[in-house]
Length: 310
Image (tube, rainbow, N blue to C red):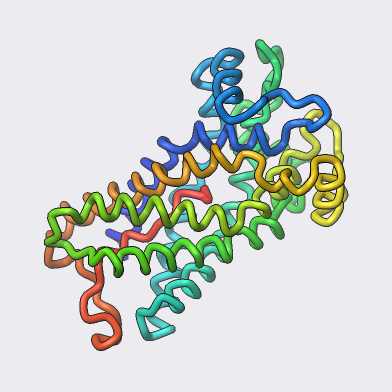
């Protein structure tokens, strides 16, 4: 368990570093004002951030996901592993249920972390030079929100985070399990790493597509109030106002950036975790067998960690 946790942390950190610039672009596109949009699309948003805020602007809010990474991976690995043991059989359905339970419980850390990340990413939006930064870093951001709004403030967007993470992690684990079974991934396979890269990347894409509309609403609610302007009274009000002003296409805002991010992030995570386990455990210890030998005579490597949701 300790080794799985360490592998997840290493893989998750690698995934965050690869995917954070795409996440920054996604958030900027999701929450920009529809009346006066700053960005025309994914590429223009990338170019604008680099031009106005330098390349480091793409990494705003990085400290928040890095700060919460250890706790999130501990929760996900612990809950998912225990859930699979309780469910008994290693089947695709049980992979979905175990992943969903892990996704739901880790929201306790994920929601405040993503709130800080979103607020940090929104700093300096549209400004050539940020004259005054509201937050020094992710921890300072959370402390300021807590001092002003209390526990409720740092848990802003919790309901939408639950609605995204619960099915999202379920789909993620299910897709990975189905793909690795179909591709016959085994430790001695010379093409194991390319197969895991593909399976991990596609699992990330499937997970995001399944819950992306909820993510748009979550980002808008967590960014609401930046600059002192509050536009939404809650989830329903946010959905109603967003659809009324921008139509149903609002729920695809930033989707291109998200999917571009999903594949390399999850592919990187799986490859990193796999290599770590191969190095630390040796080949014969990297095979996870299901509790029912008839249902799963030989399981592939299962380095299951999602960097997203992170």
